[in-house]
Length: 469
Image (cartoon, rainbow, N blue to C red; front, side, top):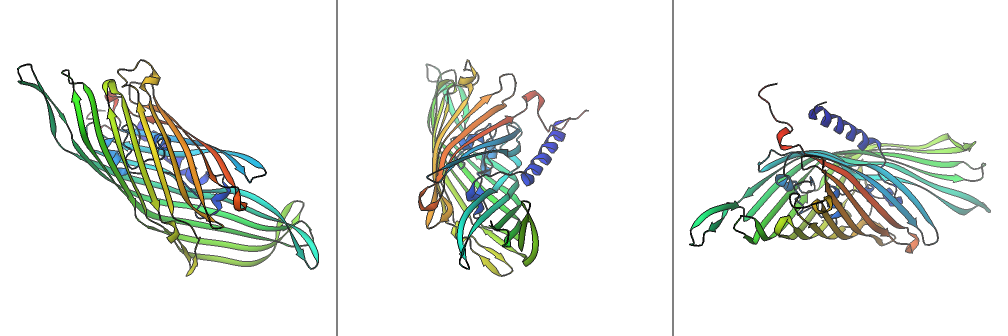
């Protein structure tokens, strides 16, 4: 099987998993359009979720398409996610877990080119919950035990294609002999600007079921099932700029130190998704633990739109590079999305989900001990990412806006047996969302990211047009 057939098989599999797998286990995924997923890679998750200034040459960063221009070469990247969730209501806890494909990207980047082309697929949001609440209600002088049941699954997937290109200045460092004569020079870029754009297609289905189940079999039960199908187009626009503050070389043209400052911006305009709603209301009765429909109370079969608000992400970083490839990068980022303006219109009827504006702040640190050539073991060759993030989510329940806080870590380990720059990727998020106050739930979670970044050996480049078979 050649690389083209392999990539085709991969994306057919990814598309099937994107539409068929459950990617959430949170009760909070029943609100809005579900749990929102971060578009990125394993390193981004470990970097505090920072995407605007992330331009690692080994990892694809679709959240800012300008970064495609800074990839080292053609790269295939796949990642999975394993989630462990503990639900706490203040008096009892419950533990859940789930694993799913998180992303599949491929970037086309000819060696030495100032552009990159990327396509891929990843989840945008996910819904997956199941809960039951027992309550008592007085009916005609008698007390009835009632179960309120809630069930939901599905989500929205995002397929995209993007392009990024860099524009760099031409500057030189001159090396002189003891008599002040220029004997050699080295070309570098003091200013570097990259621009990029993604075109995306969003698609998916969210299915939900609500039922009122009387424990007394003499009462009829009520069940409502709904199916929201959404699809639409969107775009991401990105910019990254880097300026070298100062740098020094020794006489062997090896870097002693370099300080650089980077800034990044990504913007996603408002999107209008086509939406169809099918909802069925029924009365049911349970026989031998199975609910059978008795009568239909109403049917809704409507079409309309769902508005997804604009998103703006801005960040900056300071990078130090020293001898033997040592590197330390400090970065910060702010992300905003005005979900309070989102609404769903079905046949002229507005469904306002009463969401809140999303705001997230992130800090991240990247550390590289040594270059691959100078390090003596895989720990020295690896790249390390640390981060912390805090967010006011788009969920507002009982006048309380859910908070989300997490510590993050990631490591990229080179494949020592490979002659390429391929890497194993491992990352984690340890955090908490929500509160036990106001009859809400607190979620304590651990998300693990596991994946690979595959690049060809330079003597066996992918997608090379051969003159002879």
